[in-house]
Length: 89
Image 1: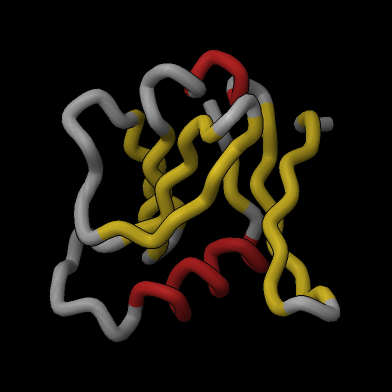
Image 2: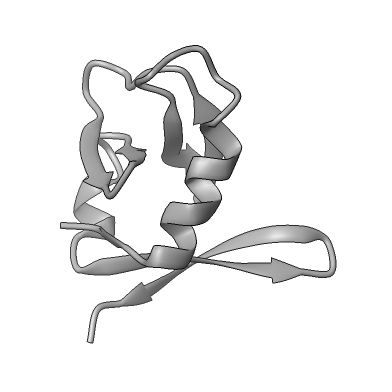
């Protein structure tokens, strides 16, 4: 199962707080062989739902096996907020 750090939870909450949908969250899917992260109002039917604190993270079904045992983190970068994935310790 994907885990979400407190930093990432805070970032996801910040990104979705203006949404009128309680189900708003961050969605991780595949895009041209890479992971793509988007803010969505609700999960897709095949998404794996990860609730971390008050943050919703949705993992597209086709990439869920690849994210098994990973940790999602977030940090400030020169270009804004960046998300990283790392193997769980």
